[in-house]
Image (cartoon, rainbow, N blue to C red; front, top):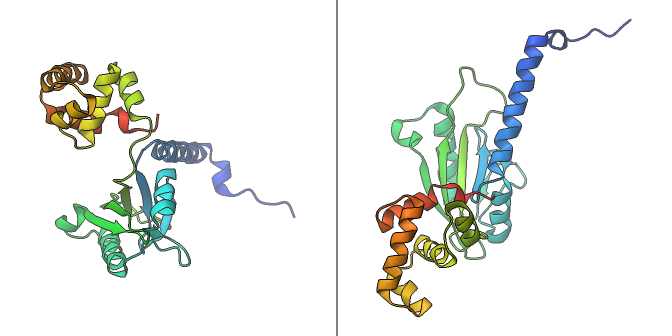
Length: 222
């Protein structure tokens, strides 16, 4: 008896939609790999559906979280694991406005390294689906600087080497005075460099320089 072709395979319009969804999903996962912070996609019970390369690197280095055994994301501290799973369940069930605003977490790995995390709900579709992603967890390692950051700043904003180094210092929380001492130059000279840096970044104040850089393309893994 000849094999029957599944109805889906005979519907070109449905196949086109499926291929389109697959293409968007592939592009979205590729975009996650370009981020310099970790992103973990979680199911309704805290199951790890996907982790980008950065999230895996942070997990290996700090051992602050893992998904061994059951596949559920777990933290080194059991109390924080409970808090995470409550946040994920709230996201899966709709939760309150406060719960859906996101849950900040400060994790500490068994190596002593601290990891900053933030759990955010994923908007639900019109129909619940199996293996759904209901929450995202963003993770960052404060002790690990962004790779090739000054070079990226120079390329994107056309900064001089000194301006790029000043921008990196400000992003890392150093003051103009500290930068002047490190460079062996005067504070007035650094202030002049800051004005030039701000003009190139498109900002007016020092705090705006930092904000523009941290929300711009320089934080991507280009």
